[in-house]
Amino acid sequence: MRKAILTLSFLLLSAIAIVTFLVMSAPLPNKVSNGFDRSIQPAHFLTPLGNMPTGDSIQLVSGATATQLFFTTTDPTVILCTDYHFQHPKRIRITLSQGLLDSLQTYFYTTIDSPFVHIYGYNMPAIITLPLSGGNAQIFRLPPGGFSKAIAIAPDQFILRKLDRKISDQQFLKINTSTNTITTEKNLSILHQDGGVSTDGSLIYDTATKQLIYTYYYVNQFFSFDTSLQKLQAGHTIDTSSHFRYQLAEATARKEHVFTSQGPDPMINNASFVYKGKLFVHSLLKGDHEAEGKFSNNTAIDKYDIHTNQYLGSFYLPLKPEKVLRINIFHDKLVVQCRDYIYSFAIDTLDSVLN
Image (cartoon, rainbow, N blue to C red):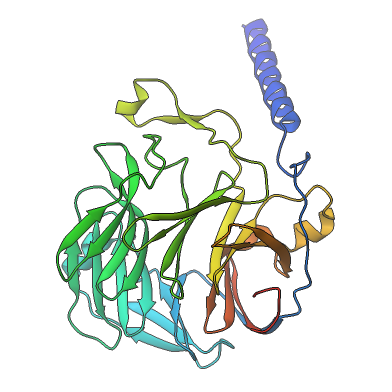
C-alpha cells in the first residue's frame, strides 16, 4: 500500500514538473522577439486633470457631455456623474419596472448619449432606451442569441455584434428601433463557427467620419465599415501576430459548443479609440528594441490613419498597461478606465502626436 502511494506521489510530482517546464519554456510574448519596432513620440499633449477610484459599483465610463462624465453602475437604475476633475459628484436615478430588472439581472451594460440612456441587455437580448431626465423605457426585443458589442449611432439606430445560432458565430447587425428593422451584414465578418471567440475585438464609432472600426484582440488586423455595414478599409497593426489560433476540438464539438486552442493565445490588442480620423490601439506587445522598463510601466498606444491604414507612430500613457480597460476621448479630454481607478487628461488638440 505504501509503495503504491509513493508511486502515485512520484507520478503526480513528475506531472507537475513537466507542466511547469512546458509553461516556463513556452515562447511567451515579450520574452522573445516580436518582430517589429515601435517609434515612440513624446506625450507632451497630456495634462492630468484628476483621478477617481472605481470601487465595487462603477461598471463603465458610459458617456460624457462637454462638462460632465457619466458612470454606470452595477445597479441599472443608478448613474453617477462628475466633472472631468471628478469633483461635484451627483447621483441620477432612472425608473425601470421590476419585471425588466428581473430580466436584466447582471447581464447588461449601459451607455449614455445625452439626452438618452441605452441599456443593453445582452442575454435577454434587448435594447432599452429612455431619457436621462426620466420617462418611460422603450424596449426593443431581439431574436434569440446574445450579443457582445453594441454602439448607438443615433438615438434609434444601433450596430451590434450578435450571435447567430444557425451559424454558431457572431455577425454585425444594424438595428432601427423606429422602423422595427434589423439588417444583417453580408461577408463583413470572418466566421470560424466558434461563437465569435477567436474573432473577438473592440468596436468603436468615429462620429466625424461616420465609420465604425473593429480591431481584433488576438491578431494584428482591423477593418472599418460604414453604417450600412459595407466594408471600407482593412489594415493591420505593426506586430506580426497574423494567425487565428483558436480551433474547434473536433468535428463533434460544433454541436457541443466545446472549443480549444492550438496554443497560448495572448491578447495582443487591448482598448482602442478614434480621434480626428486616426485609430489609436493599446498594444500589449513590446517592440524588439523597446526598453523593458518603459514598456512594462507605461501603456503603449500605436496610431494609424484609418483612410490609408498607415502606422504613424506611438506614444506612452503614464499608466500600468495591465490595468487599462477602456480609453475614450470626450470633447478633447482623454479618459482612461483602469481596473482600480479612472483617470482624465486634458489634451493639446494642436499637438502633432494626436493629429
